[in-house]
Amino acid sequence: MKKGTVLAALLPLAAAADDDAANSQIRIAYHGDDGMMVSWNTFDHVARPSVFWGRSKEHLVNVASSAVSVTYPTSTTYNNHVLIKGLKPDTTYYYLPAQLNEDVCYEPFNFTTSRKAGDKTPFSVAVVADLGTMGARGLTTSAGTGVSGNNVLKPGEKNTIDSLISNMGGYEFLWHVGDIAYADYWLKEEIQGFLPNTTVEEGYKVYEAILNDFYNEMMPVTASKAYMVGPGNHEANCDNGGTADKAHNMTYDLSICMPGQTNFTGYKNHFRMPSDVSGGTGNFWYSWDSGMAHFIQLDTETDLGHGFVGPDEVGGTEGEGASPVNGKMNAQIKWLEADLESVDRSRTPWIVVGGHRPWYLSHENVTGTICWSCKDVFEPLFLRYGVDLVLSGHAHVYERQAPIADLKIDPRELDNPSSPWYITNGAAGHYDGLDALQSPRQAYSRFGLDTANATYGWSKLTFHNCTHLTHEFVASSDDAVLDTATLYKKRRCVDGGRGGGRW
Ligand SMILES: *[C@@H]1O[C@H](CO)[C@@H](O)[C@H](O)[C@H]1NC(C)=O
Ligand SMILES: *[C@@H]1O[C@H](CO)[C@@H](O)[C@H](O)[C@H]1NC(C)=O
Ligand SMILES: *[C@@H]1O[C@H](CO)[C@@H](O)[C@H](O)[C@H]1NC(C)=O
Ligand SMILES: *[C@@H]1O[C@H](CO)[C@@H](O)[C@H](O)[C@H]1NC(C)=O
Ligand SMILES: *[C@@H]1O[C@H](CO)[C@@H](O)[C@H](O)[C@H]1NC(C)=O
Ligand SMILES: *[C@@H]1O[C@H](CO)[C@@H](O)[C@H](O)[C@H]1NC(C)=O
Ligand SMILES: *[C@@H]1O[C@H](CO)[C@@H](O)[C@H](O)[C@H]1NC(C)=O
Image 1: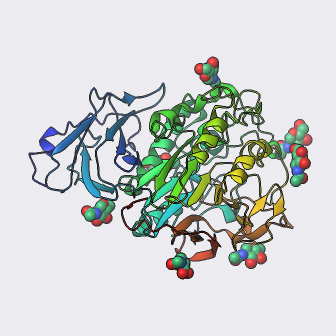
Image 2: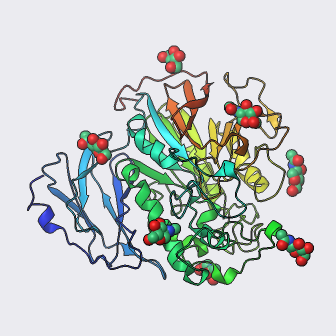
Image 3: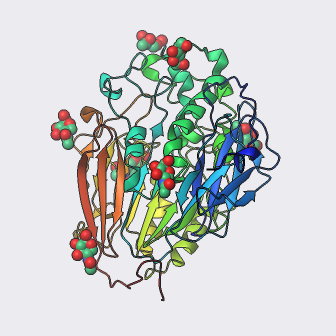
């Protein structure tokens, strides 16, 4: 680009923060097929966050601005959010936030807008859940006392963030179905003697540093692929990543729940998911279309409705003490029903739902891991509206299940089932690694990987056409596909062609 045009407008900000690791954490999110939300962090408040953008790298002739530069107590940064509107679907644009943390000359970044609903071109997306910070404050080749050798990286092992970066050409957006960064593990990491340079007394610094590390590590992906996120318990956790570990007689004190964790505060500050254009609530429940698929993000943590208290709410099973994020009676399930009702299956034949907690999983039947109240509120709607695939994480394992309805395995399996297909993949990796699947596995289990396999990985979904959808488990260490399965749905395809077409 021509220096002195756009770059003259860069306002280098003082880099004098406690946390020298903080960078600009650029992330983008779809906002319909004609918009993109650009978000980034700065050390100082920005009065008018702005993004230069254009169709050509050399001419970022447009500027989009907002007044949204927000933070919370203990955060070392401000979260800036600017919506770029009036874009064309499935089109590449270049952009550059005007205020960045580092006084360096960035080349413009680029993104491609969402495919128009009804575009029948095959495409793939990447999905992760339970992905934490990598490196010195997260998952690395060692961990603190009590962590199994299966649950750390081998020397030189490629981690999930590395794998997502090196495979960026193979997917259109990244969907993170809850548990982002695991900053709440700071206390567990301190107690397990993993953090040599900091103390429990400096908790908030460690907490914020883990978050900053994560968002910086993800930036190579999130600055050019839409990063769609949903809430997990670790966005609200006040038990500091299982510090109330009876085996080690550890207790916890809710008074050291970090401000960023209480009531999902950090999560609310950091992201702007497209709930305003899908009738949802914040970053908690919303939907979007891309090509031949309708994607729905649900909140399994709060606001379940039908009188159920969400697991993270005051009085919930995990004692996190969060308040309902919407609070109106049955707000989420009323929204879900209306959203499902409105899907035009000739345009978006596929409906894929993501929610953090599973209910079909080969795991000991313990409340907290298995969310029976989620099943009670959500499953009837999935059945009534023919949801195709349900994705979850929460348990740090990979398990592909059979299509199933109310505990009954669909006899057609993947050959045109009438029940939704379920997949849990919480094996992306975080500070203390992987969990165990129950043995023997549930009758509906079709493939599984757990701590015994010491394999981290992510999910790749490929929408071939209106009848075939493939799920792959990609091992992060070598990008090998360790499990692949294709769902067939018998339906008449309406030929939308590329870019939509007439209906
Ligand atoms: C968009 O950005 C990515 C990541 O920096 C880069 O690899 C790619 O070449 C860029 N694409 C275009 C069309 O400039
Ligand atoms: C602790 O400090 C050393 C020396 O500066 C550094 O190499 C190391 O990465 C730090 N560890 C953590 C967890 O921050
Ligand atoms: C935990 O506490 C119990 C009772 O105080 C004691 O018997 C046990 O040895 C302790 N376990 C550890 C791992 O310290
Ligand atoms: C969460 O928000 C509610 C309502 O805004 C407030 O009453 C409550 O004290 C907050 N919880 C924490 C732990 O800060
Ligand atoms: C699981 O446990 C719950 C109680 O927590 C019970 O209501 C339910 O029937 C159990 N389900 C199965 C499949 O064992
Ligand atoms: C995972 O580990 C189990 C236990 O060692 C083993 O039986 C199984 O074959 C492994 N799965 C894969 C795909 O390697
Ligand atoms: C849909 O895609 C699948 C998988 O690639 C392929 O086998 C099938 O023939 C395709 N169907 C049509 C109608 O093109």
